[in-house]
Amino acid sequence: MPFQCSICAEESTRICARCTKDACNNHLCEKCLRCSDCCECEVALSGPAAGMSVGSARAVFRAATAGPKPEPEPPHPPPDPDPEPMSADEPETLAP
Image 1 (cartoon, rainbow, N blue to C red):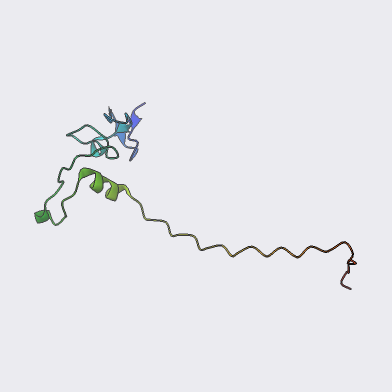
Image 2 (image 1 turned 120 degrees about the horizontal axis):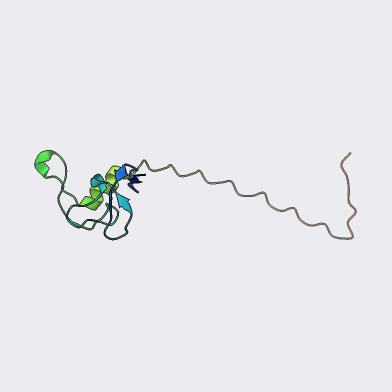
């Protein structure tokens, strides 16, 4: 059974040199042999002439694999206040 990339689940035959997770060729840096999560190379992946800004491999991989940010849940209403306790000398009354 082939191994799967821990980042994208594609077939993988290599592992990260740092964390030893399986990684495909798309998520393994050729320079340091680390997965995109562990890579600290400051290699420019494209120049301004290509229409993209210059960035590190880690930043580009994270931006490409990051999904949409979930919207925060609305705040919950505060709980109802506790009723005041009855004293022992007050009679209990029932509503008709």
